[in-house]
Image (tube, rainbow, N blue to C red; front, side):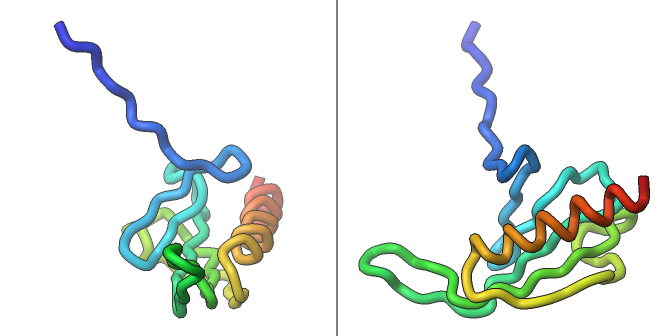
Amino acid sequence: MAAVKKKKILTYKGKPLLKCGDRIYYGNLDDKLILALDIIESGENGDIKTSAKIKIQLMDNTGELGKGQVYRKGERDNLYKALDIGEWWLQDAIQMMG
């Protein structure tokens, strides 16, 4: 019998990241809120494609994924800065609900 391979999920600060095209979802899919990061502009750094402008949205996750009400939004100039502020928004909102 062949061993079953488990796919490793990319995480940031203990929460999963899910990429669908130019959109990245951050957070537990079972939570009421999730973070959506849209890559608006990208550039090249040698052979590596990098993000140059990211739109951040803190949104409701009780309906269809990515179609919920937006509670907070902003833009940052790279993925790290977008994840950093977005993670803080998400943690703060979940604690306030809690």
